[in-house]
Image (cartoon, rainbow, N blue to C red; front, side):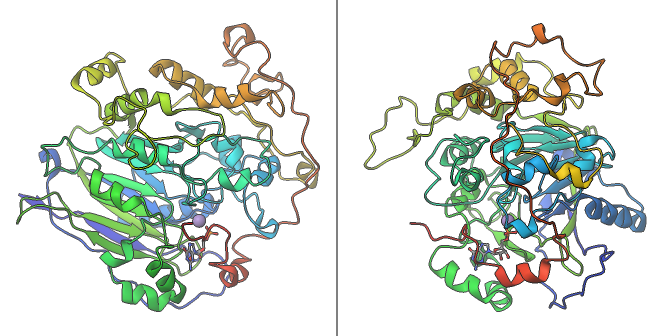
Length: 513
Ligand code: 5GP
Ligand code: MN
């Protein structure tokens, strides 16, 4: 028996008083029949958005509008980067964005507790992020109650669906490096901080099926901010290049998107692939090898626009899950095993990482090349017990902003913090804690997390300082580092027209060197 999963497009709530742009309808998402998952009748309802650009209020408003119209509630919101988890004005200098677009937007209210995300929200990073905050959570974690960041790379489960994600965008010059960046960001580190790394894509490729498994789709949903290079060939590229003429040349010369991601699609065969960044809705269908009907399901690619009026920035997906599936996040046992197996690749030193599957000029220094978990390694993970991701581990590290007053702007760039979620996760799994390694590099600009400060609201849950095994001299009060003051903010929405003119001229849009 087969069922059709529902894919439905939604436009912005149009509550903004901006001139609407008329666009031709995009090609309809490609819908294919698929085998019913686990014989279940239950459908999980997921809202997907392209770039968020800090417009959490508008996104949740749009979702509420759809919920009312449809008479159902979403179970999950997935945001495909440029999320802008800006906690206060001190985070703005850590976001690579022209000063005129530096705006707090709305996330800070969800961080401070003034608002609560009405639906479980999952996001990956893009190229406009509060990078200092995100690099507190290399393996992911809660950035606010009910809002979960995937980390540099991750695979987690929701209602039994395996969701893998890669944060950042591709830049050839940085892809071989370790994740060494942290506040205070030196020189161009504020840009390289959001560039994807081969080590993360290598880890994700270990999610591929067993050698004798030619039919499965090991991953249900895969997320990246920029597009897999080559993806236009699997959709209506003529339509795309008509809409965005500069894409044609870039695509032809291999500059459009991340050139390593098609391999990830072929290795992990995700049923859905969701992306953003190029600010246009585009669907494609990537078939997988097989003979006749004996083949894995094709990968349905969908990239969405940004949340401005009249643009197709949100999509509702309904996916079958087991009837007893729980609407909660849990760690993926294979991914946990992969993290353990590849722990030797984690370093905070600025260095190029030689990967175990690297062939050619660099000699292979690893005995093992295949880091897919063995049965024994998965047994070790099983000993960890319940893999449900706890929902109450969020802690405020930077001070929350209660009110956006003119004085609130006069703060130095945020410090770097030891995030207790990273510490707890890495200790539990028995892997290196990159957040700790980054703190250890230097005590400069390392701050005392807000939740440990006497004026934090969290008096009851505040740990005793002696109980926190962070070493003796990890915390030095932030001295600030410079007096860069965020420039006068204009809302990103108001500035959209200007941005459109600048599109494609970003420094990140570079050819593989
Ligand atoms: P941002 O990440 O700054 O929000 O937006 C990225 C903008 O740059 C989008 O409008 C997108 O169309 C454009 N862009 C991103 N990558 C490329 C590329 O490789 N080629 C071209 N021509 N434009 C790009
Ligand atoms: Mn982007």
